[in-house]
Image (cartoon, rainbow, N blue to C red; front, side, top):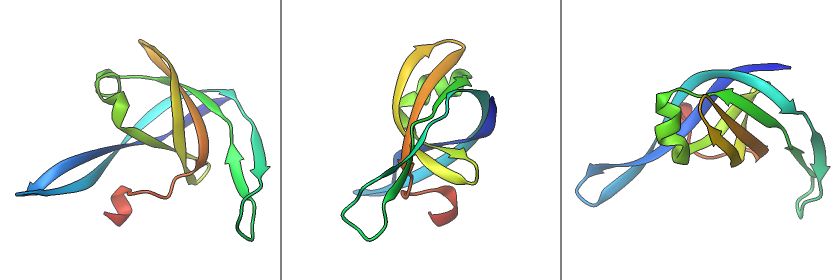
Amino acid sequence: MKWAGKIGFLKTVQTDFDVMEPVVEEKSYTGDVIRNNRRWETSSGINDNFVISNALSVVADDYMLTNFQYMRYVTWQGAKWKIKSIDDISYPRLTLQLGDIYNGPSPSNQ
């Protein structure tokens, strides 16, 4: 299955003397879904958490290869999902393991 979406890169920048703020930049990428798995995970709250265990093989560009440490989320089917790990860093592809819903900073709520 093919995937096309955005990846969010979260960097901390100095905006004033002793003031650091998160800045998220989204970039569009394409790739392949190499694992497609969903599950409900029991939580301490009222509702269980919905977690995906998908793996994406993404076609990387120079920006991604030099900034992979800042990648925080991937857009998938209308939601933002946390990047749990990057398994394979080999040009021209990166393998991203996804997990829970991402609730951190994004371009729309900065």
